[in-house]
Length: 295
Image 1 (cartoon, one colour):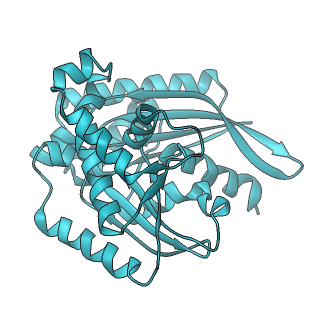
Image 2 (cartoon, helix red, strand yellow; image 1 turned 90 degrees about the horizontal axis):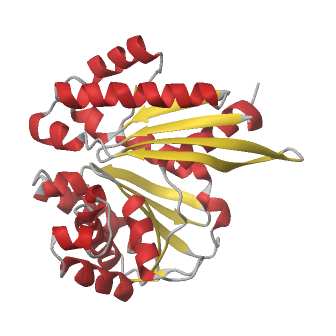
C-alpha cells in the first residue's frame, strides 16, 4: 500500500510517496520518493498578499507532475495541505479551485493550529522520555510552530507568523516576536530543564553540517558556532564554496536565528533533530485514519 503527502509551504512544495508496512497489526512507513520544488510562494504572499500569475502557472505544473507521479506509483490515498503563504494570499482559494479543475488534486488550506497538529501526527511523543520536558520547534518559511511536551503529552501549542521567508522579506512583526517570547516564557518557567526538538529543512541541513552522529543532539553552542560560520560567508559563497542550494543558502541564516533565539528563551542546551516534518505527519495521519482508527 502506498500513501502520498503534499506540503505546499512558503519556501518549497514537497511530495512524499511512502510504502506502508504492516508489522503484525502495527503500521509504519518507509519513504519511497521525496521531491522538493522551491516555488517560494511566500515572496508573493507576504509582500503582495496574493500569488502572482507566474507562480500560479508554476504551481499548477508542479501539481500536475505530482499527480502523474502518484498515478504511476499507484498511490492508494493522499492529502495535500497548503500552509502560511496560501493562508495569507487573497487568491489562495481561487488557486485551489484552479488546481482541482486542471489536475484533479484537492488541496486544503490549513490554519496554523492544524498545521502544528499535522506535524505532531508523527507521534514524536512516543519516543520521548516521559520524565523530561521538551519544546518542539518547527520552523518554516512563513510560520513557526511550537509545542511544549511534558509526561509524553502536549501541554501547550501555538503557531506564530515568524518564518525564514517572512524575515528575509522584512515582514516579521515585533509584536509577533513578543507574543512568541511570552508564550515560551509562560509555558516553560515551571520546568527545571527543557530539551529541544527541531524539525524543518533548515535544522536538518544544520545538523548535517554539524557532522554530529545520528541520535546525538545538537548543542546550543554548536548551533551558535554554525550560525557564525555560515554568516561569515556571503550568499554567493554559501552557494559556491559551501555548496548550499540557492533556495537554502539565504533562508538558513534566519532559521538559525529563530532556533537560537527560542533555545535562549527556554534555556535549552541541546536540541534533537529527528528529520521528520509536515509530509511525515500527513502520511501518519493517513495511516491512523485508514488503518489504525478505521470504522
